[in-house]
Image 1: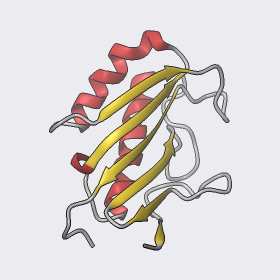
Image 2: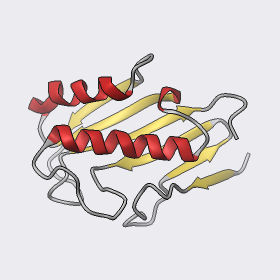
Image 3: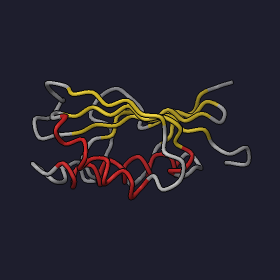
Length: 132
């Protein structure tokens, strides 16, 4: 089964050699989404809640471009600069993942590629059989 690059006009062009997302059959592998907005700037510098909103919006843009919805996301890996932000991050996630929550791992990291990033989330979605 060939893989297909997924490109959303609602996301900034990748700043490295990677796809925004890759589809293989009904599976969609979404690259780590940060608070980078469509114009390439960082939303919510210093504000983990604002950054988490942007990250979730970016995840939604990627899965929609593949023909799915946030509810199709089955797994996320969450990387944070400060584990003390756990509750604030989950408060925002609950606003976007309103159905069955995805399986999740969260780890604290020392650095991101941009010093202003506070969170990054990658995801795996399983699209419905009738997804385009």
